Image (tube, rainbow, N blue to C red; front, side, top):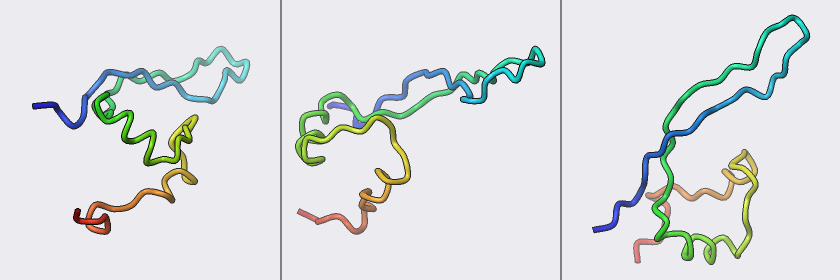
Length: 72
């Protein structure tokens, strides 16, 4: 059985740079959930073969909640 998602370690860094006061950027170790690679081809086709640089508000507008998706 193929897992639907994979939990992978990531490192998150803030975009706020050093303000010159000797401070540093914040770095946090975290985990992120990614769809299993076996879904990549289907997701690519369903997205109209359009990729996204990052998940943002514009991309999220196209998300369809599970209970609103077709049942077939």
